[in-house]
Image (cartoon, rainbow, N blue to C red; front, side, top):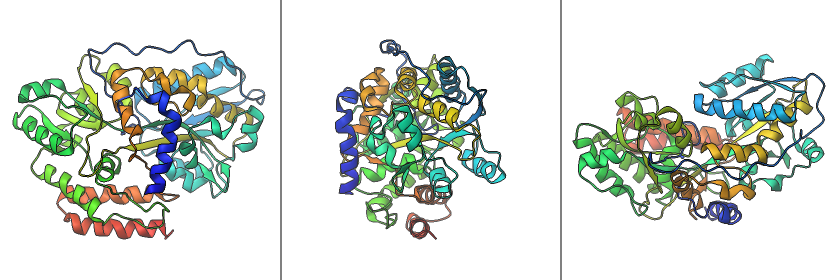
Length: 442
């Protein structure tokens, strides 16, 4: 655990001046932020520096680019493609988003020889494709383009490294904040959240909001990511620092699982589907719940989808032992079988580069992966969310090459508990066995 803390602390020493004024942030998209309707609009940084194509590309190259995400995230990347076209006019990018079951569909496409040239890469796809030679190692092309691993926040690159080679570049990172509807607190006759809140304070507020009969209380699904801050704030983790041993049946984890299970059983915690929403951020937009935890993506989502809804964000609540949050990262990689490696690399480098990242930060969608751009976060709610990433006990959500399987074991355990199929003890004992088998490579 100390090693993980050291990594996170190291990251944010570099980011200190960048995000020092920030206040907090979490995932369904994997980046959401909360913003009050009365806050000033996002202020753009100074004009982005002029850019040139990162590499000499193949003549007449056409590449397919795919990722997940809702329409607001898709708009982020259609705009990125437009900017790329301005600096690399000889490359045509065919954007083919896959909003649902991206990992499963991409694996099937890769097996069938129809995978896109460039695509989002998470820990699951990194594990599946890097060791099998299906992801293109980027280091030689990075050298040609003058791009260094040190251009990025160090811990974000670690997830995409195998045998000292780089197989993807981080496109964004995020963390979770406490998102809420001020009107729900007014209706319940209680004070709004503060940065000093605990999970117990959240539970009490959720009970009172739910009692109004007008709103659900706290929205959270059976999701490892939303559960992580509960666990981390109780001194727990999903695996040991060396990624060899699962830690899902420990008192630290099970106590928090029982906490959220009790909230669910008393109906102060609801899932998005319980109130007729697709995800908890939407439940806020539709004014169906009083609170949830989401990330910086909430800023752009609410601005574009529910512009008239007033909402706010504060720092993640603290737990029994400490205040801690979770960090998410996603990357962009290249199909090793692409016909146009230079064009694919040029696009990857541009999209993850400082010029384009600076433009994305303006939207509130996510935070830049470049330490030099930490001070670009200016929206008050976005800052509130990002603060969680600066906490000393915050952990990067990475448990080695089998991270996806470990996290899935947590989500499935929570689902069984919410469904009433198993007790916390039984469900997390099963999760422990599943996660350990994954870490053992079985």
